[in-house]
Image 1 (cartoon, rainbow, N blue to C red):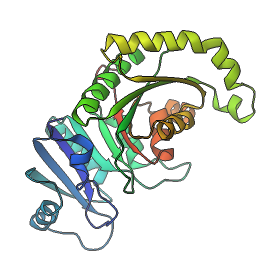
Image 2: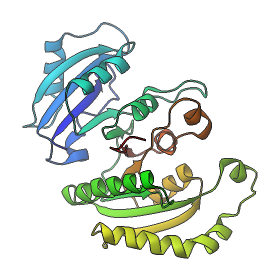
Image 3: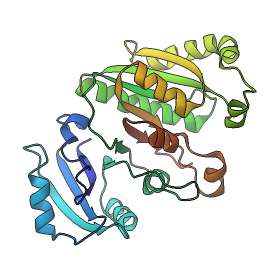
Image 4: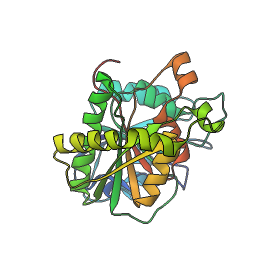
Length: 276
């Protein structure tokens, strides 16, 4: 994570993404490009944004470039900046929840950008000593590739941040079955739990993560992931996303997007590097 793109709402006193860079990424950051924007009121000049940001970011980290934006053009400016230069990671604070029929900028970025995205919770939390990586054990080549990228990133972060690593798989229940209580999580665990646990052990071993704590549960992934994160005292969750677009994304949804909306923790989202 040497070269990062940071999105900062500089007129929002609750946007603490700059002050948390070291906590989130350790000492691995070497180059930082900042997209600064104002959601309301008068905007600042590039020099003013650079000065204000420089008073917050942990030293000796320096800002390489500042891009000015606004709430109206933020999505386009982020896309243009990410296309003009290769970044290892994008970091921003979580956007406010939107209505059912409105797609948040976070969801749009998850679907459009392939670089990893770290979405920070909009409140300060006590620093924890654990993190949670989630995988999907379905027999799918694309999902297998995402699992590998998730565990690679999680393994590196757990070492650099000195956090205990937890790895979880949730045996999924369809939302309609869950809401109508047509599927029993305990029955699914008895039926599929042992095989899933063994498969998860093999996956962890393949990535030399035998020391990680493994968890298998059944239910709605976005709910179970939150429960597991709380139980393991994890303040960072790593998830994979296929980034569904259009009608398929609207109907099927994206687990990563729902996790970000429901989880009051920092979430690192990994998109596949191969074409989906």
